[in-house]
Length: 318
Image 1 (tube, rainbow, N blue to C red):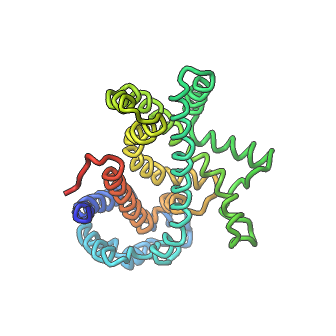
Image 2 (tube, rainbow, N blue to C red):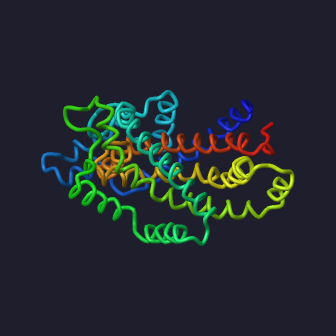
Image 3 (tube, rainbow, N blue to C red):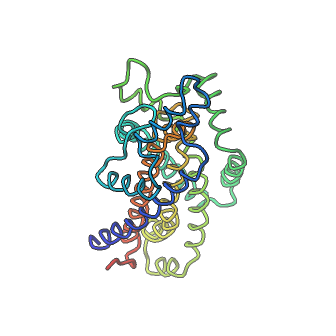
């Protein structure tokens, strides 16, 4: 298992290299650089100032030289400085990364703790009124975009009912209060986890029903095993495999969509930082965030692959 994990991590290096080359190239294909764009709106900035700033940040060099310099520094943990704040990019990202990971992990937890049990219950009580209600509710929520659900949640749950804060990560003056931070986390985590809940409920329901009809289940009953042992030891465990398969994809989707959730709920995370940096064409921040998100996504898929060995004993990694 350890050799497999190490091999997968080594295989990720060429992939990260390709991602960095594509990201670096695509950014430079965009028209105008950030300093030229700023000159268009800043009357105090001249063309000489733009040339001077381009020379300071190495933007006047050929593209391949810029990439080699950036890649060498990035391999040592130095992603440069922001064009606008003049701060080290890693410092800016590390300040916000815990908030993004907290929101992503909470949304995943909400998806698992709500979606999986509802899927199991719906399968065990198929065609019942509650089963029909769950499937209808899932279809109803799927018909609305996430941004609309988020805004409705803010207006009603946060505004009119005042059950949760309408935004932010903590109340001013209570930044160290764990309960206050959890109170701010509930609403964005629920909204971010709605898609996962619906998907996991549908997958778990269909897989549970399919596994209940398999021959190995009838064999287990014929051996005299109790229903609880058959359901938990065989049916639910095998039905959970597709859910675990989609875990990596959901993690990647939540990371890539973090800019939306963080913007809607004023959550100070990396996604919101990337959105602000994209509007300013702050290239060092954008590319550093791209590489960090890509690395986290690859690690997430590695965790999924390793988890198969525990969920399915037939899977072996040599």
